[in-house]
Amino acid sequence: MSMKPTNEPESPGFIRRWLDTLPDVQLADIAPDPERTAVCSTDMINAFLREGALSSPRVNQLTGPVVDLIQRAWNYGVRYFAFTQDTHTEDNPEFQAYPPHAIANTSESDMITELARLPFADAFAVFEKNSLNPSIGTGFDAWWDKYRDLTTVIVTGNCTDLCVYQLAMHLRMRANALGIQGFSVIVPANAVQTFDIPETDDAPPGTAHPGDFFDDVFLYHMASNGIRVVRSIS
Picture 1 (cartoon, rainbow, N blue to C red):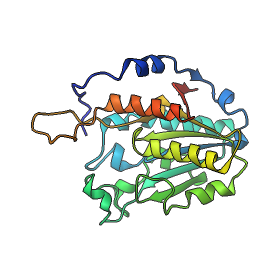
Picture 2 (spheres, one colour):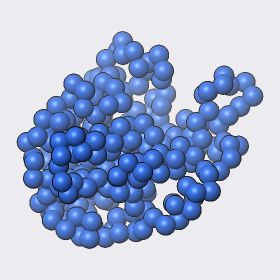
Picture 3 (tube, rainbow, N blue to C red):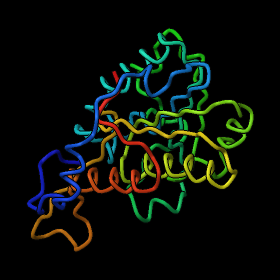
Picture 4 (tube, rainbow, N blue to C red):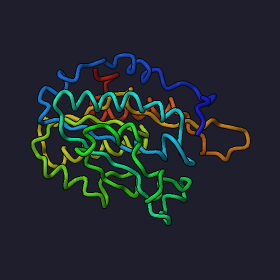
């Protein structure tokens, strides 16, 4: 995937004005009780950051912000970390929409080393998924059922408009459906990202993917559904 920007128009003015209002927040302010806080990260794997048909230098820039946030969360006392990761079967129907990627038992499906080598990585709950959805066939909801006292979840990873959106929205909708009061889903904009595919004269219609546009629009849409979007968490 290319980092070259498309020639598409900027995000709508109302979205850009909203983005300008996003706050930088302190971890202790948004998650006052680390024992009731979780961090969920999606698809921080080689297939999207380092190698393969869907790897993106733009998405690779998430490495520093995500690793830093997870390290600071651990230092603060957070002990619940859940990672959802593409781990596909070779004949997955998803490959009709996207090139084959993150096939099980290949290096593409591995968590990036900067996360896997953290000294507390044995505390990570890893859920292999065979689709964009974090819940179908993964055991992810059973994990949340086990830790019912959690009230705050911070969502990071890629891509903003695909698996991040699916993850954050699933957590928000699940809490709504189960009537869980006071449950907060938080997305720091600097710890999520999506890829960019420029529009070209010879590309089939419907293949362009302007990264900034989709990043902005899906952050806005998450916020409009009750997810708290912030600029960064320090």
